[in-house]
Length: 171
Image (cartoon, rainbow, N blue to C red; front, side, top):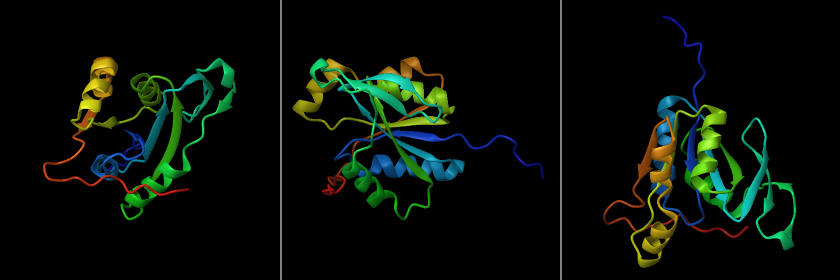
């Protein structure tokens, strides 16, 4: 039997507060099947990336010039607690990463930098607000699918009949 000299490539999943847990659960399942790390990524659209580290971390600045601060992006503690709640018994190795800028571009750059196996994103919930957001921002999944050479997996926000969201924990 020959050992594979290529280490497993990470699975990247886009995360946000209040996201349906099935998106994260499915991404964790892919990572487990591939024997890969799960990289949970939140992209702050109110900041612009200035520079990127080899691990995908970014230094960023606020898009508001009155709030000029060139710092390394930090991951929201409340969102990290939500992820911990969902992933604690999954058996997957995971980490968080905060990025800045336009979501699909940031996820795509990270996927290239880490040579990810795939990018996993969720759909927006069908609502008036969600439809307006889709109209103006277009879909992150659509942007990724047109700009990526790697698989983009789109997980529906919820299965029919499922209405639970991630529990929101106060930090």
